[in-house]
Image (cartoon, rainbow, N blue to C red; front, top):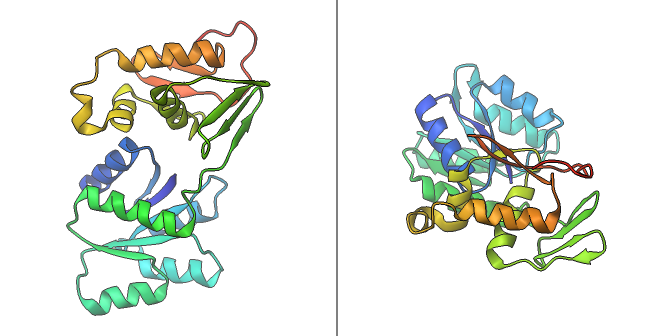
Length: 230
């Protein structure tokens, strides 16, 4: 899921970005209201926003109010140190879908993001159709051309994660966290991701999953040219 984070605290913002991206979400981080307003109107996909209230260039509530007045119904979670009941009521009445008071636990934030997304329908999986490849996330099925692929549970989990954001670079650590979780990662074999990538390449064809040496992996949305290298 594509998220917008409006937060000017560098340490907190980085922690939120790292945690959400480790669990498979793409995060566009803004530190000023003017940047967040541009992101709302931009061409890049945005499915849910996390808004701080007190920013150097204004109040996140004003941004939320303007988005709702413009008919924008994308879900918003307010993140703020303002812990008075009146503040929470104001945020919710302005149009926030949830309200989380700082300091908060990152796992609770993740749970709230996914709960709000489920209620809004933002997590409804949509089929992905690419040149030469079709993925049905709800049914957990994949086709290369007209041939349905036989994938193990772990191969599908990795493919679903990579293809959720074509063109994005995924580090091995992020993929391990997404597939095994922080607890299971320690028990996973050190080359498990590489083994799964190798299997997927044989089934998807060369060039669909690219390796950027020392950085990670990227799923390509374009139809790979014949003989394309991995």
